[in-house]
Image (cartoon, rainbow, N blue to C red; front, side, top):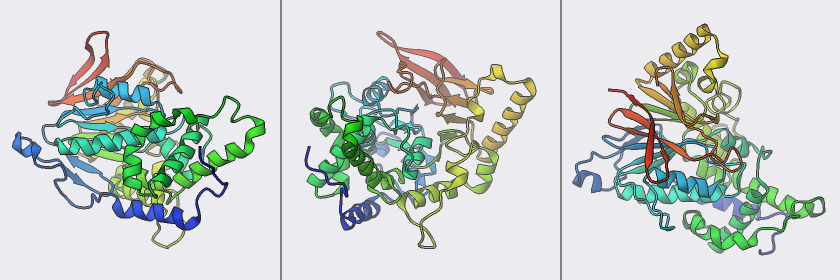
Length: 393
């Protein structure tokens, strides 16, 4: 690996990276068909996106696939996408989902070694999908917001090394973010030989470890290039009649305004503020047990609850969905030992199965929504098995 001084990048260069990213990020502030004409040719109405970052999405007649927490496990991410029928199995990382809409529910960061590679893969798939009349969306989870805050407690040692390697790669691209970021997943395999020796992160290698920590800070601090990349994504996303978020949406979040929530988190990640000061962390979305990314109310084991508690949660969920004219909500955040499942009359779907090797290393499962029906699909030996279905007609 190239020599890497402790200051990593001179301040002007770091600022240049952030500025280029902000200037080149796709704007979602107005209704637009950014998906080409193929959908219209084949009878599909265009996908319409409202909000910056995306908050409301109209995707008529599209198949929707939702994938839960990935936590830096690129191999498991690819298995989940291939099982869902949106990623090629030939190693070329090609989109094969046609007009499908793919939604990833956050927690790509922490506990795994290929976080940036997964983000790169999703961006590449989105670009390919839009040319086919489909789209890829992401929502940020609590581990994305933690890292932008500088909380690196759950970072895998190899992930620090990925940050070092990626900054070298970015330098090779003269800090042109778009081409470097999109191509990083293809280059990841070439950097495997740059993995540090087993004792790299030992007590006698503190300087090397500090380099990894600083590299991550450069990328993920508010206004850093990777934080700006994350700022493109919402914490709450409504697609057709479905709400997608990492932890769970509550009535007071809706009262506050989900487009406002998304915008404030995005501004914070970009390092922007109306007062030209360091922006405050959007507490209602990112901090506290009942914030959007941390809430576990809908993911609790019902066997631990009394009947009156279940009824209260059902009422809260119904109130939230009615306020947004939604049929159901899809959440991640809390690993489900029984696999993807639905509760409360199937108005909530819990899809985090802990598939990352850094969590449970479980077999991937995903949620599919087609024509008002939601079902869980997982890979069998020779087929995809349907585990549970719900009809929302």
